[in-house]
Image (cartoon, rainbow, N blue to C red; front, side, top):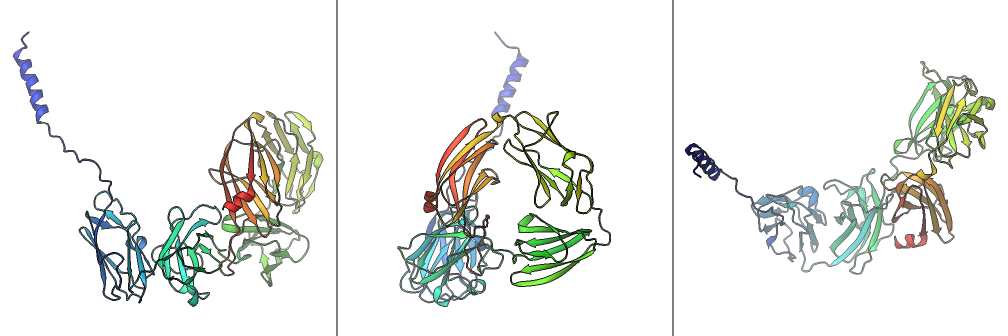
Length: 534
C-alpha cells in the first residue's frame, strides 16, 4: 500500500528531528574513592626533624581541599602557636610557627580535614609522625570513655595526659596537656608515640583548639596516675557534668500571695530552710536543671516573715516581704486521671488543707455511690490518696461538693468533679523480673525505662536478689538501667572535680523488653554479671 505524499513527509520530519536531538553527555559513575597519599617531604616517621622553621609537604593523588583544620587536625604534644595550613592543587603544606621541643616524638592526626575537590570524600586515618630526636617513642595508652549517666560511648572528647612530675591542682585550667587525642564515635581512644613516663589523665568536652579545662565543662577523672607502656590495659573513663552551682544556692525569692513564699534553689537539701515563727507547711516543686522551687505556706497574717537558711556550714536569716499588689489566693484541685488498675489515685491541692468534710466527698462507680477501699489526706496535707479495686471498662467519679475543703488560708473549694474510665485488662501487659544480686552493703536503683525517650516507667531499690512483678504495663519497648546508689539517697549523683569524687556508676542491660498487650514476660537478670562485665 502506497502512503500519501504529505504523510510520508510528516514521518520523515519527525525522524530527522529525533536524530538531531541534543542529549547531555553522561557524567559517569560518582567518585567515591578517598584521596590517597603519594609522597611525604620529609618522609613519615622522620628522625632529627628540625626544631625551627620547618615545614611538611604531603602530596595526594587528586586535587584536595581543607575542611575545619583547627577542629579536625590534632597535634600531640600540642603547640603553643598553631601552624599554618595551605593547599596548592594536590599538595598540603604545614608550616610550623612554633619552636618544637627537643627529643620529642610528635603525632599529627588529620581527622576528616582532607577532602577531595569534587565529592567531598575525606581521606581516612591519615597520620604523620616525626621526632626531633634520634628515635621514635613507641609507648601508648588506650581506653574508652562513656557518658556517666547514660552509659553510652562519648565521641569527640579531648583525652588529655599531664606529666605527674609537674602536675598541680591548677594544671588543667592553666596549661595545655602534655599529650592528647579525641575519642572516636565508639568512645575509644589511643594516645600513641609516648615516652615511658607517668601521667594523670583527664577528659573534657571542648570546641576548637582550646585545651584548658573550664568550670562548666563536662569532665572525666581517673583518680590514680598511669604509666605509658605497650602493655597498658584499656582505661575506662566516665564523663560527667559538675554541679553547676553550689548546692542550696538561691537564685530567686518571691512572695506575690500573702502567706506563700517561694525560693528558687539549686539542688536544695532537706535542711536548707526553716521558717522561724509559728507553724508552716513546706512543698518542693521540681524544676529545670535542678533548680527547684521551695514553697513555704505560713498562715500568720504577716506581710513579712523571716527564714533561717542553711548553706554548708553557714546559717543566715532572710526576711521576705509580700508584694504590695498581692494576688488573690484560691484553692485549686488537680488530678492525673490516666491510672492503671493497681494505682492509687492522687488528687493534688495547691494549698495545704486545714479541714475536710469527708461526707461531702462522693465516690461513684458508674452511677452507684460507694466507699473506696482507702481515702485519706496525706501527712503534708497537699494531696488526697484514693485507692480502690478498679474494675476494667468501668467509669468512676469523685465529687468534691462546694466548700467541703478548707485550706490554711480559710479558702473553700468550688464544686469539682473528677472522672476516670478504666481500660480493659487486655490493653495491658505484665513483666516479671528475677533479679539476681549477692547481698551487698551497696544499694542499687533498678529502673525500667521507655526505650524511645528514657522516661522512667518503674523504679525499685534493692541490695539483694529479688523478684519484682510489674502488672498493668502499657505496651512499650523498655530497657533496664542499674545505678549504684553509694550514698543511699535514692537518686543518681554526679561527680565533683574539686574533690575528685567520681559519679555513681551506671550499668545498662542491653536487652530490650517488648511489653505487649495481654501478654506476660518473665526475664532473669544477673546484676553481678552486668556489673562485672562493664
